[in-house]
Image 1 (tube, rainbow, N blue to C red):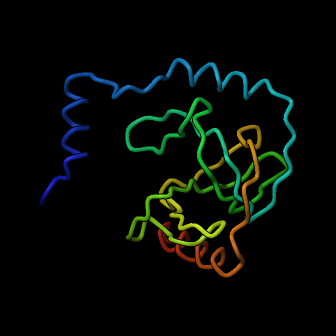
Image 2 (image 1 turned 120 degrees about the horizontal axis):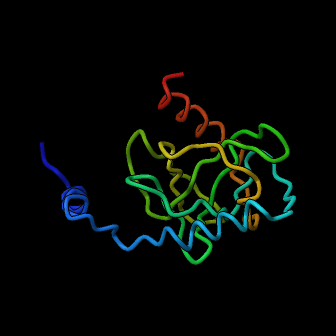
Amino acid sequence: MELSLKLIMLIFYKILGINMGKNFDSWHQLKVNLHNSQKNIRFKERDVFWASIGVNIGFEQDGKSRLCSRPVIIVKAYSKSLFLGVPLSTKIKDGSFFFEFILNEKPSSALLVQARTFDSKRLEKRIGMINQKDFNELKVKLKELMGL
């Protein structure tokens, strides 16, 4: 079994106690601000928003920029403030953990394995909507991945 260079480096950093430059303190302060915000952003299934997903641990997907954000597809709305979302990447990846589609005339990859529940306070700006055909395929692939 061959280990990827990235995995080897992560193990090396872990052994040495290196946090790989992650700024957990600034994310914590941003998270407190988000929690205390009075934002009331409306969303619906298929919407794609920039969302503050944070600085996370291990192999969990991190956000980018000072807002620790990345695009997220709203897969299932549970309430006016809670939803199941899937983070996106512009790096196209193959395999059962990913779903490739076109968003705003650009290739995107849904990181299905990173699906999770989000609060709408994390939402920043709506940037588009996945088309119905791709959305249906994404849901099928997500169900398969989860064994449902």
